[in-house]
Image 1 (tube, one colour):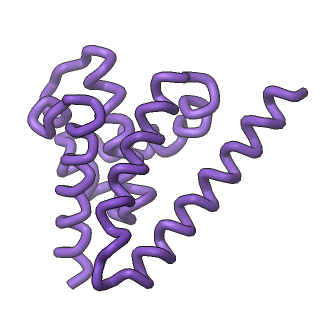
Image 2: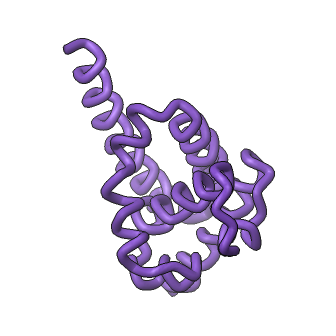
Length: 135
């Protein structure tokens, strides 16, 4: 069902993060606070919540964090994406890798709809970023 689907997508996401950053799921859910791991954790939390559509509580359980931390990942995404180049590049790489896993999937329509929603939100963020830069 839907929950199994989200768990599967979470696995795909952690694989995508490791593929792009070299950081394992074990490192992400550890207590380690080095910047590269914290960045990967932040992106994982954001994508589990926004792109995969898990609840903040479920994401918090997966990441072994507090639910307010997940809310914080969501709230700070735009600022991080707009002003922190390493965050933006990592997010773009992970998102691209993650979504490419679903392109030739039997649930293609649903996945394409999800991807469109995700890309529309990214386009909005890029427009906002562009206005910030040009003002």
